[in-house]
Image (tube, rainbow, N blue to C red; front, side, top):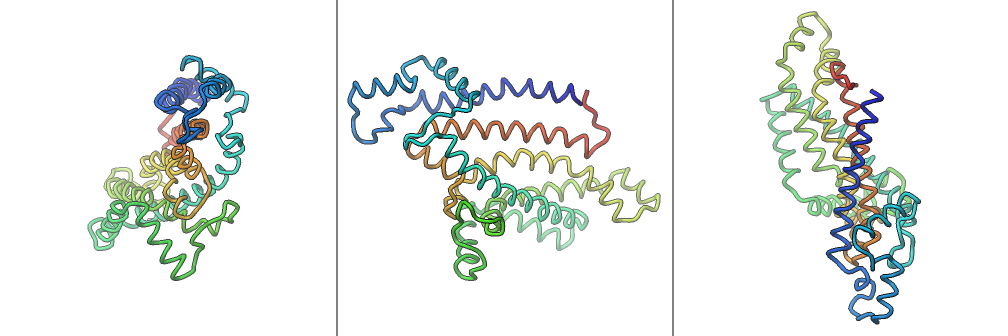
Length: 307
């Protein structure tokens, strides 16, 4: 197991380098950060040249990238155009988005898997058809539609939740935005679990467990569910980074100043250091989540061994 982890960590190095260089290239080579700093005003050539020199933008792109990576390993992600260090923006944005993501993931696991198991064990019945239709509707409705609808119903009409959420809000105030963020993924988890359960109920090892006289609850929890969760764990693991980076719409709806909000503002204002810095951290989140998923495979299925 230890050698496998080391090998995976080494494989992450070129993936991290390639991903960060790609985003660095798209932001800095295809745009002009100095012009974006001045907006509609034309900068003075001497001033623009001095800024480019101070920001290392007068060097070739590959040198800019190496310089940027060297600064990152020293904990310096640069300075946003508003004068605040990018690390300061991260310190205020990532905690609230992380809590929002945790709420969304917990909902996916508890509600999605429960509905999937309940539907898969009753394949072809009315409840199964109802769950499939509801999950299809949820997947088909865009997040900005379901978000504003749930905000209006629960936040305005019923006043069960706050229509907007402060960055320091407790977890209970994040339930509604967490539900909005998790809705589409929750539907996919439900359908994945339902399909895996429905297929594995006819597997030989399940029939053998039933023939041995094991209790139905133990057959489902120890045999059926454990083997059916592998595709679900794969989806949830890759969904962690997607939720953190894809919370732009949800955070805009509920006025949450998290990662999605900062990325939106950075893209809108062409704030290159902010965009590159935040995406770099999200790349690390994706890589860590994928490694965790691979390690969970061995826990769910004892037949899997890593050399």
